[in-house]
Image (cartoon, rainbow, N blue to C red; front, top):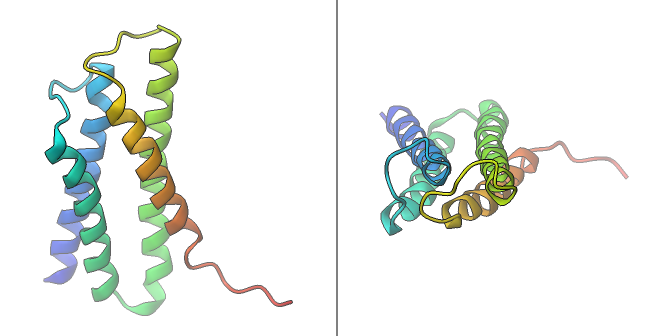
Length: 123
């Protein structure tokens, strides 16, 4: 049950991140509010934690890498949107704060998850 709930929370969090990225670009019709910022962070965090708690230890590094890679992809999408908007290639709709938020939060969290379970190096 925890695996299913964690997966659903994680997918909903990533979907909220996609909405935060696509809104300012004009490809999503919603405007980002405080609820979307909070939901993106909490749903991804709770979803990952539920999956990590319920997973077997050998699968935890794979789970962290997959989640981290998806968050890095969201951050790359946000960076691309910021570049396209700042170069006036596409018009901004509603401001760029959601893009900056996903770039920073998604990028840092994704990088942390990608590097969290690396094997220790011998010195």
